Length: 266
Image (cartoon, rainbow, N blue to C red; front, side, top):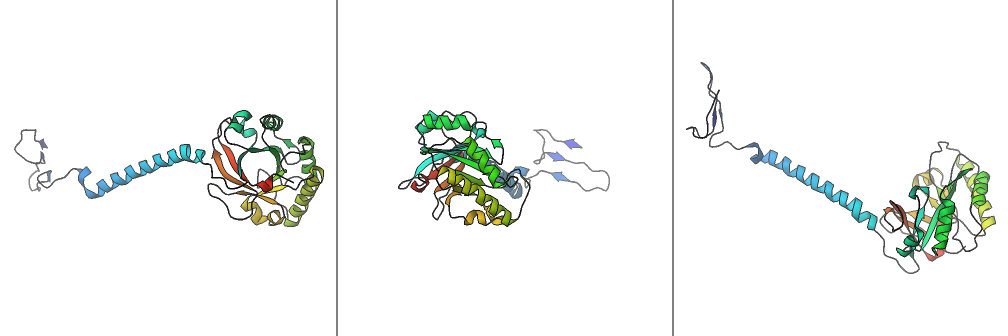
């Protein structure tokens, strides 16, 4: 192999000298173009660059745009949050100063679990002047009566509190009882809690739960709709508008909700 230097007489730059009877292979020359000028490879480079740019935009939207999202309010609506121990310690005075006007706080789950931050969150939200309500995560692994006892033993009596809420979704419990059993046990929970509290519960029902247990959504109660980043249709009382919101006083991301006036009373 002979490689011509900068001052060589061949225009292409590289000549392979064959042995006897072999053809000459010329690399370069007047018609030769480097790989980055070839249309197919240039297209690949363009696609790669666009992919990287799209990824950067997506990260910026996720980290900057979506957390700042707050839907515009209509008549009698207000922004709020729902929290649990996952948010850690919350500075409720800062939450109230950041345009938040109510809070739902996780109290219990199943027949024996108590959220470790419930008492602090309940007290903190009240001290900050925020209307507050408690919610219970309903499980298919405990009876409705046991779950009602757990909830009522933990949540303080407060006539001015928002109506209690029930979260109906599949959690860690893998049991899947019959529709009739779920309807019965949920009915026991709802009637027991409402009789004690004196207010009708609000139902938060995930779609997969409702598909398997239609009675959950068929109950004639105020609805808490999960409809991320776009306003739902219908007669909802509370709308979960985001699950990645940033609110001053809360470390990390938090659920952002919108309440209509119907959710304030009993």
